[in-house]
Length: 475
Image (cartoon, rainbow, N blue to C red; front, side, top):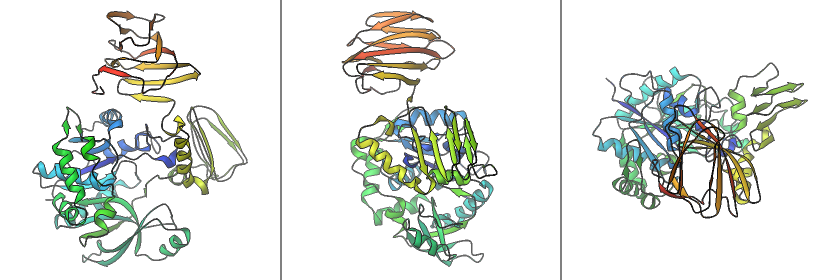
């Protein structure tokens, strides 16, 4: 019987090349880009009907996304055995080390499968067949990587050069070397040789094997990760690493920290319709297209155009006479780019951040543990928001130094604390909250509470919130 398999889902990426749909506050793994489910949900569901030896996953994620991730997994009936909150990103090697330490502490004789939350796999049965074959190799002390047979010269992926076969059926191969993302000429040369495979970034190993290699080649990482776990805060649903301790951990990928140095690494070539969905052109390649090669989502009308990707989140897009164009519409930003230039979107996001444009980080509609808010209008000294509070949820008890607020209930029933007063408000009721006054908004009803918030003051930034009490531990 196979050793138990523990998926470890890494959900820490920001997906900046898929801006403006993917942003730091709502990255691509939390979005439904390929199907009706989010990419995180699709990743988790690959194992829902797997062999009984497949255990509940460990999820490692950005602390800011913890409630969104918990909600999305709950929607598809998945309960992680642990959700680890990273206070800051340190790449994949520390994440794999954290998972390995937790696994070893649990005393389970299990194999860990490290996989990103934002990859698309078309042929899941082929993937799972390769996984269970890889489990047997991992039990023998190997670190198994999954190589994808390339079908084109791709400059956005790293490559693995396969060496000699190590099993009679020639399913597994030694790894001669790892190659960073090549230029176009190099990529065209590589795909002419069947030894070269795309590096999927999916890795499998016994935790004891990985930690031994990590201790040899990058000892600072297991040292910092072990200290982070000792000082971690365990909550009901989350395992929160201590920021100042985890910050001492070097940032490194699994490839750079271990795989490029270890002699225990093997690769299994697999054809599974894989994509890291790392750019708009990559999404166009796997999307359903019309007879002219156009992939459209949302409210789109198109004429005399070919090989385009058009995506609308709300507004009508009308396109005439276009070729090889990417056009993405969101509620506060539009991207227009030739498909050959979509790798440059990351640079555009950097420009937005340098100029402190909020569009580089956040959507107009911002999700919170209690629901969401949508900034409808803003100008010098004022801002108007729609606030949606889910049933049974509440905002923190808080006050603001610089802004006053007025709330007008549109739908539902609100219980409002203002100063020492407690009031119940229904539709069309309103209340004023002066600057410096402590206040809280709660939805005790069975349907969503919607209200309009009008802010006024000299400073309206989201960092002007002093939390006194909070059910989500954000104080």
